[in-house]
Image 1 (tube, rainbow, N blue to C red):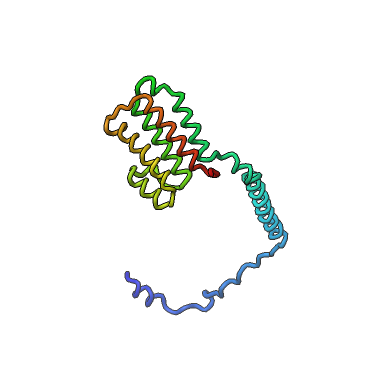
Image 2: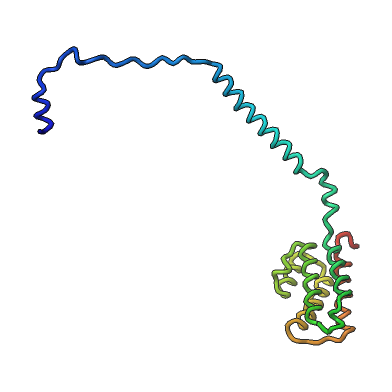
Length: 185
């Protein structure tokens, strides 16, 4: 039976069978529940803020002046590393390549820390150009060029310097650090 035939066969609508819509339910509102809920939320927020501020105070440095003094200057680091090379036994064993590689690395690291030139990432030629652009004195650039060129010869061209020549590399590196360190005349 189709829907249309069902509608026609029902006949007339009885007035008593239709009822009015029920009214909405009345809910009694207690303000006590809202006060308690609000107090709990405010308490959670207050505790969170208190803990955040307390943690932040603990992580802040006590004195920025003390922290600056703890960080060694680039020339101090270079002096320590050069002293470590002098006490190593690379020269005694004849490991000239390692010896010169370390001297070159220390000097490049010093230049990077002192002049903010990415010396560890540059070739010797590019480093010298960057030093000239940074207005570093010509005698210092020439001395760095001489030292790095000699180190490169040992590292890449299989040049074997004499012991006295190898020890002079440390003296050259120290001279460069002495003359260019912060506070040098």
